[in-house]
Image (cartoon, rainbow, N blue to C red; front, side, top):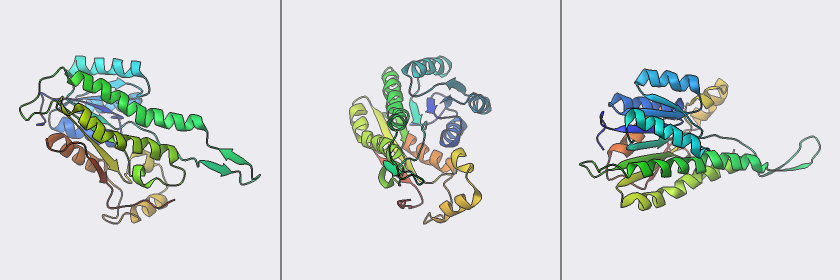
Length: 260
């Protein structure tokens, strides 16, 4: 797919971090970008910066996504690109003992369900709704009708202690990738997934410098945190390389996460 001003894109979680870097990359090629996010201030500011449109939306709500897609399409036209970056983390062990009393605590299932609802179901909700819209378009000269890029995590394969819900949600995204690509192949829509390692995103930027330094040192090479623009570079390749389909690609400096 050639990126230019005839192409529209939707990015969930687009107001900051990996999504914002991808939005800037696409806009630099002339693509008309719609940002789906819950952060009004960051979303509106980035939309002004790149000449895009901000749509406040929660990926757990079908009504929100329907309204956001309608707004985005009214401004930019039907999207050919969907990049799913919206997601949350969290760390709770499957069962644990209270250090003071020794009492056994079960995992709070509402937390498990929340993470799955946002990361996995939310990603699929956006995929099926966006892909339905893409079917209204004619294929481009290179054959593409649309392209979807999802965001999983190395935790899908190397989940650490306490990451059971997060790892399950990201493994679900990986597990969907090939089936989605096969489901949508006859409609000429490609699907790929990125598994980022330890990236210097707003969430990690709040960590103390010694913690960030230790994380960077754990990466084999290069010994640093990943940069959001590097995620955007891989997203660019997944979007523009027509033969890249149904793939889950780690972007992690060769790290394999330890148990903790």
